[in-house]
Image (tube, rainbow, N blue to C red):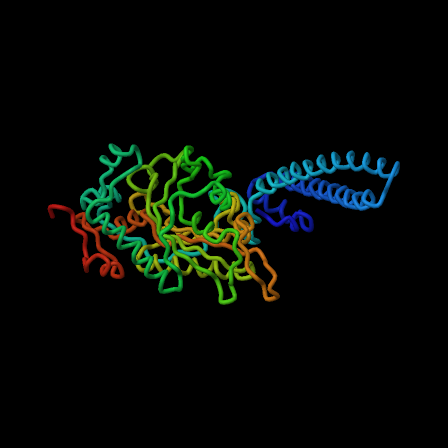
Length: 421
């Protein structure tokens, strides 16, 4: 959630952020009113409590008719205090709902607009020139790497089995990503797939993204769509020592998403599925360091894309396409030969203090005073990368060249050959 001091001191910045996202600027006024009402309710309660305490001291010293009169006032005042206390609770609830309704403040320089209004920052690598282009599913089926039919039989549409070399390829890819993360000072984590509502809500995934989230109603738990959720909750209600720099984690997890409303070519194969595996980077740092840490996460994503030798571009996502927690997001999109378009493989978001304020994650500044931390996340590898690897490194006979950096993780294989060839 956003800092209430910003609402009080600089509401125009929040209004501008809302307009850039395509959201209602009137919510800012609603929040300001709720903040004012809550402060008035607290002041009224504190005044009555002070009077109640003072009256209690007077009663102790009084006698006779004066004491009887004071006791009558005490009884009436007790009812007023109780009413005022209820008013505070109601005002705080209203304030919280109004505060939760406003997404993070968009960073200066983020493109305005919606999904198609991103800015391309740069393109890296050359698109392959293919004599014959097969899509990833045709290639994967030739390699006996994916079984969509039995996935649907067992679990329904958009589930699958990674089989044989497909399973090995995913493990190799994520293991290479894990090694890179550890080499760069990340603590490797295998995270829970189920989280409590306060953790899911704290990361901002129960707002506009709620329809994408699987919920186990009997247990009041949610299946995560990314290990970001569990990692954000890892230090909830804690004060971190960030004196030596950012606290970094790399979470390996299975991820679950409803993918409601997706259609078309993305539903063929394993581009847009309900379950996949991912290695996610997550950083806790100071607000002043957050922008620099964002660039570091992007650089590590680029390093991984270089290792698998993919042509890609980096886009600065438009404000209207940001998640509620992100102040800025960069996506890396690989070229998809079969569809002649770009396909998102990674994203990295600077969530500033938005998630940490909800989850009460703090650090001590140079004066020892607790301050709200900043959080950031970034994808380092995921099942979808297999799509781009197969298509960009395919050969005329349906075999697939293994990127050099990945070969040692696949037992030295240089080429993946179709079964029977």
